[in-house]
Length: 540
Image (tube, rainbow, N blue to C red; front, side, top):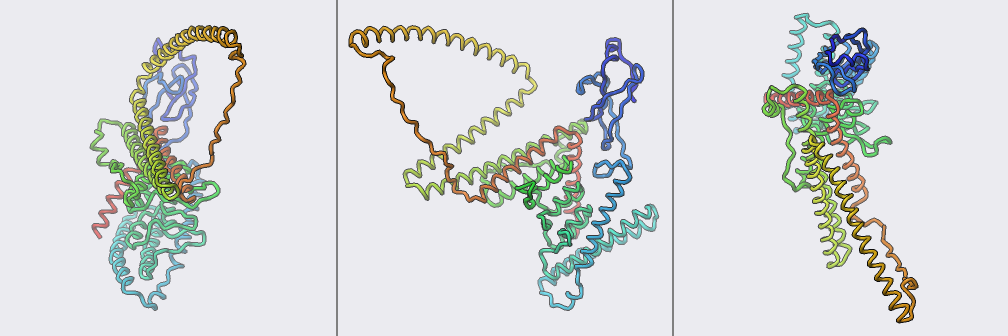
């Protein structure tokens, strides 16, 4: 319900259609009486949004007020809205099913008796002792904290049972990992549906499992039968805390799942998060995936450029952006920095791929063609490569110039109109001049034809001369051999498509303030997870 009054100069608006804008949602306002409007808006995540009345959905015709959305029991911590009790019960039931699978996998696949009866190599025994020494104090500390909380009776019985179950699973996971370390097993098994322990923990948002896995030496990028890692499952389920913990522990965000009928080139974690509607999380994973891909190519020596995309941390952002900026302005600035980093990393990766393709073409030409011809073709390839880079540089420079002059669109429009008029005047003048010359040429040719050819030399005129048609050269349209293997060419095309999708994911944040908030929240969670992870490693 919106109540107010119109000024004398705005009273004519009372008979017009009025819309109410709350955040990014625009709904039609129904007039109860003059100065009183009512509207119904769908639920939104908690936070401050702008509220105002408008005629066209963009321009305010009233005072812009800040409206506060409060958190309700129907909104989960991950930002998804579940208005009904049935949906919440369904989610609890799904989590319960995953917990059963995790418990079965931990209790059914660990065989302590076989370890005791078999001879363990000395190296594996030392690793198992080190792991037990590092994790036993952690488990004991968690039990002491749980007993203290249970004695205070500040929590409900349901939450207490949930904490107890989680602590039992944590204790069993420590024992299960201890057996795997003693066996020297580097690839843990799967359950009946193809997921491993780390995948089920990612689905349940058990971030504490990441630290135990990292201490055991098992890979966090272990894949299930469909090629999904724990980071893929965490992104698919929207588990921001789990994603932050996995990234801080060294999980690779640029890994691709196995190809399917829908996605021939596979999906990265950002694609899975975007499919489920987590746009901010998808943008953050896309940026991290491009940066990780660039760093991997730099370490392997595939990138010769020294320009390294830099990502601003939360502390750097707070130092750069003073406190006078609002939350919306900070989100916009961080979104711009993320897009700049993603575009820079994608540009470096594509340049490295083009350079490698040029080297392969050069080697293929040198092996097939003679020496002189090969040197000429290689020089032509280098010139083409340099021209493409120069042309791309000109396009980027032009795009930057257009962006810098975006707010001066009126001057640009006037200039275009003046240029069109000038071009029309120039075209009219050139046409007039050509027509004058054409008349002179036609008159001169007519005199030449009549006086010399037809009368003096008694020959046929110009109209009687038969012009022989020359056969057009047939151009070989067969594609040139690039010297690349077929699988590398296909994988390169798929990698370029994934990079373009990643840049688009980051760019899509500008259309949604909610995605910008989710990106900033994910960035803060990642920074906090990195501090916690490194502190725990130094402490152990």
